[in-house]
Length: 501
Ligand code: NDP
Image (cartoon, rainbow, N blue to C red; front, side, top):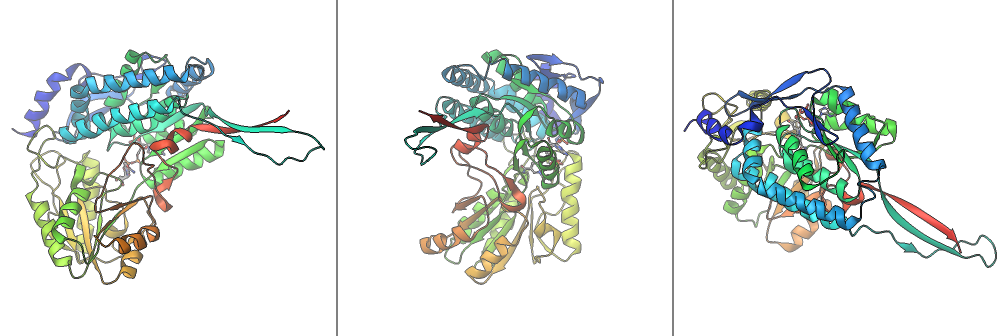
């Protein structure tokens, strides 16, 4: 079957959602954008427009923030018993699972991702994360603290801290894992008692809109979860700069993240930035080269390399580099490319034509700068935004393909001669999101882990995340942490109380 036929077949199942002109979701109901302007949502496998979503203006963002503020201040949510918030979040997680077919089909239609991946990550892991966060609603706590206040002879003081929700959380979400990353931001905010305005990427708004409907079905009060669609430069920027936010949580590129951070600091709004990466995978001399090559293939080709932690720099001890390069090249050439709905496909399309052209630009640039193409290096299939998985060798540290985040199925393989050189190459990047070390030598692993400038280090694995494991970067990869306790605590302010007794 051709990509167009796969998509047509699946659109029938979600036609009521995927074929219509959508509004925003504000204060518990669908709401037309103020200027009646819309943007097309395009299926990257077929390049067909599948729906229209609002091209919202600052006025729409303002409406949504006001609704979220009312819901927060009216105490319908923040004043609700934590056990009740936990129950509603639990119900939402079940509804996400019950709608797995529909949500994963929408995800594949709007982003092109493999349907199995949408099911496992956006829906499956997403629902699990909501359940995990539901549990935190009843477990947030302060501390009672011993004190040494010597105000007056005989005075006595009782001091403690308590956590309070920050207010309205603005969540700005990219297109690579639209539902999962939305849930990474929405669930901790709701667990903490905050209300939310969610701005999905203009490329992938459909699952966010459906999530808001499911939240209503679960019983969330109106205004607790609002969704405003539109472009980053307009709706996203208006949300980041809105005075009504207590916190803004952003995932996306470093330049856009920098703009969001600046806007937040202007208003003294708290913020979290989860930005790009150029994550190194270090294969030490004692590693099994075939195992490492298989790991590298998963690390870089998983979701067409559109993953912030993708193993885009494969650094291999010189004694193994030929074998690893050869095996990685073979793995790349053997991957079946096709529609995300094709159960045989191992690589779907990139998210958009614009993005495909950007990735191809890096590939052409690398060729011009003298890199050797080991595998791929061009578009794939006829029509659609498909790209061959690509491996480069003979690259130099200053090349753009080595330094910049390509965000596509493009890896570079580079040799090193010593542990010292491996660390220096790994850290020679403006980014610091993640890294992996491949070795059975425990001493070497323990020596390397603290020296790698990265928010996460995997050992003999890559791209492994867990609801309970904080996730975020250092350097140009951002600030703050998502997932785990850190995420829910970031949606609270710590208040200190000092009582004369
Ligand atoms: P962006 O950083 O531009 O977009 C991410 C999100 O931020 C989207 O919702 C976007 O909206 C919004 N946004 C964009 N500009 C602003 C702004 N000034 N203020 C507020 N919100 C804004 O990523 P792109 O989609 O343009 O992708 C470009 C590159 O970014 C990729 O090639 C990759 O390198 C990196 N990236 C990293 C991701 C990660 O997971 N860390 C995820 C996605 C991209 P809209 O899409 O509607 O413009």
